[in-house]
Length: 314
Image (cartoon, rainbow, N blue to C red; front, side, top):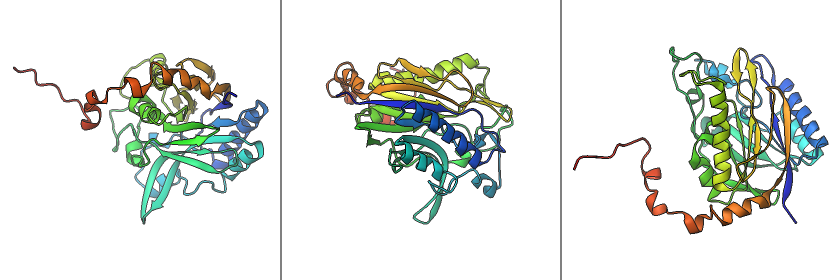
């Protein structure tokens, strides 16, 4: 028997700054209902799926910042998602801003969870590759303050058993780093689910929107192919209070090919049947790590962070 699961990539259109959690959750529930009607067993929501992309706003009042964070999941406003998961027998992935107290210290993370069909949380991931900056930057057309509002994730890149397969998570900018996928690939990952909120324009360059869309798919397709894993990348898209976010949510096969993709900048569902057994070929041939990796030559990857030019003097 094949291990095929039907997956829905649940792209969200813009969430305006004034839209409340209840309204957003109702949109998520509507997508879950559509996914159920199409036989989905897993639905994947974007990064920071409960709010607007608030790191674009510079805030000095911590109380104002904390209004964007969840202190518990499920909460009163998000409990209906867990109820729907149980009712439909549908797992889900959800990104949100997490405020948590651990060992008496308050921490804030850009977080995602993986929820199984029973409605129980089986995995949690905290974003590691935080882009942007800490202080207000007058040279930017708009701000990107993830380094101001979030701490670097402290849970690594684990994988979890789910749907008789191995699942991993990452968030947005993580997808651009090959190490993200390789760490999970070394654990045998068969599906990586991730959400992103990526601006259509770069605040520091005149990079064309079509190039940014190309890079979005390129990074996920490379991660899928080079680790022989399914990758489900889901966007929050459209015009959020005057700020454009790209769409392009995609379900990508272990071959690196796009199996399904969203075509709008609105709430939209792309669906594909994902056979986890398709991961076997790549893992047993070109990317059979045990046979072909040469870690004795990879030392710089973990020994060095930034670029150090070689000494060319003789």
